[in-house]
Structure formats: structure tokens, C-alpha cells
Length: 194
Image (tube, rainbow, N blue to C red; front, side, top):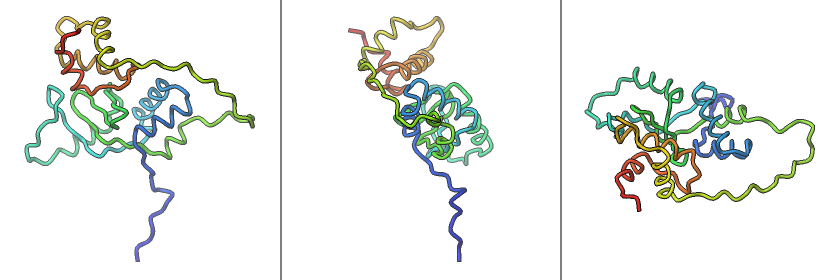
């Protein structure tokens, strides 16, 4: 008869977006929450897994499968160093990409996250009164991109892919109603500004 799994070693996984939402509740800041989560993922303090791992070609598109078995050693090496690099993280889509690889359906350990998030201050029985923050005005993505292109023009010898990647990273931190995917940013670079 098989024994039941030991619950002390079972990891409870939550989506990356859920982890971000929990961190925002604790820190009260989306920027700080994202910064801490990135650091914990990069240092290995916050274990993660993903539903799919993709290798990208030179243009940032999914490399077509050639029917060969993947080199497990190179994938494991890439997974270990993945969050230690500069990444484009799509929090709402639970995915992240660097220039060569992509992780889709990212989940993190809820137990580890709870241990990393700071506890309430000791000695305070009463919950502090929270003042309502001023309403944050979110820009439409197209309007933001128009302004961002003016503030951050394309650099000399910067190809469209690198320029789109730079703008996409800025968009992830900006106050926009909806962040676009890298491919959408790249396509919109060819739109004429009105």
C-alpha cells in the first residue's frame, strides 16, 4: 500500500501574478514589489517553475522544433541563470523572456514567498489607518508609446528589435492602462504617429 505524500515537503505553487499581488499588499508599492520579487527569483530565494520553456531565435520568435530531443543540460543551465539576467517579465501573462529563452506559465512557491515577505510590525495591536492614495491616472498604451519614442529616440546603430526591447522594458514600469507584449511594441513602432 502506498504511503500518503509527506505534506511538509509538498510545495504549494501560485502564479507569478498572484505573488505580485500579495507582495503589493504587503509593500504598498508595485515598483517595490516587482523589485523584490525579481531579486528573490534571481538569487534563488524564491523557487519557481514554468509550464513551458522556449528557445528563441535571433529575432525573438519561438525557434521551431527540429524533432531533436532538447539538450537537457543546456536547458537546466539556462533555467538556473534565467532570473539572474536582464529580463522582460510579463506579470499579467506569468511569463518572462531574455534574448534567447522564454518561460511561460511561471509559478512560484507560496510557502517561500510568505517567508520572504515582511511580517506586520510587532507591538501594534491596532491596524494603522491607511490613507487613500491619489487616483493614479493610467495612460493609453498608444499615447504612452508616442511620448516614449520622443523621450527615448532610437539610438544610432540600434536595430528595431533592440529598440522595441528597450521600449518594452520601459513600458513594464510605466503607468499604462495595459502593457503590450514585445511583439506588439515592435509592430507599433511602424505605426505613423498622429
